[in-house]
Image (cartoon, rainbow, N blue to C red; front, top):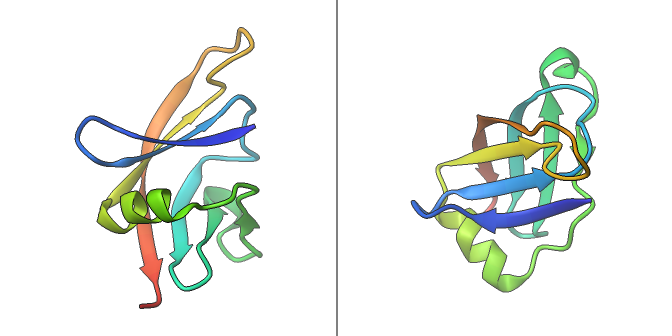
Length: 93
């Protein structure tokens, strides 16, 4: 399951209780469609993965104000969480 949150400094946090296929190299946000796509480090030349999470108008405002994303994976179910920053590329108006 993927969840979105806001850090105390205003940055977007993407939390997952499952491991991603690889570390995320960047996150593309398509403003007009309110869609997030992940591009992974070893698969930058291949298709990106659509994030399976609805973006509400409130979360849209958090994303628009965030210069980057904090990614935290394996955040539950006994797995050791790990995190890193990824650039947030905003596309559209």
